[in-house]
Length: 172
Image 1 (cartoon, rainbow, N blue to C red):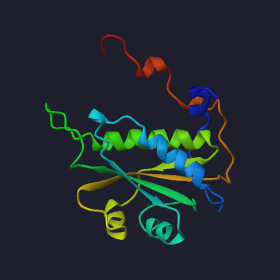
Image 2: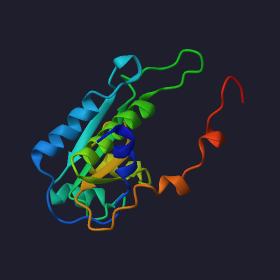
Image 3: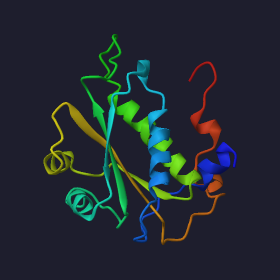
Image 4: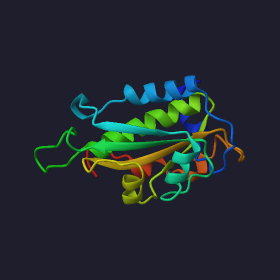
């Protein structure tokens, strides 16, 4: 499948079966995150894998998990992240997001469904999982086998702005 077909196939699933994600698929998804580009290749991310019910229940104290059987909490390690010297922008959150995106698309390739969650209380996650202060929970990627109806692959024709509204050549 070509990249655009893969990207269009992915949708945010909010209803999952209890079927566990196979370890070889999880390994593939994690490898996609490992090879994701990061600023200066510093790789300032840490991924907390939650697949046991106890961990998923703890996560549910902070975020909707939609009964997904697997969650990846992607954190930025601010002691390792590249900082742009001009304005001191710490790129840990950017790098964590790139890693999350790679894993999300790899999951789609392996016929897993996902939803990227940003609406969560990071302090609850920090407390429940003993996350050090130097790590920031940035994203949660829920993975599993969807029980909802997949979105139409051509939905982007109506749901996305045309390129003319988002792309500018040479000046704004």
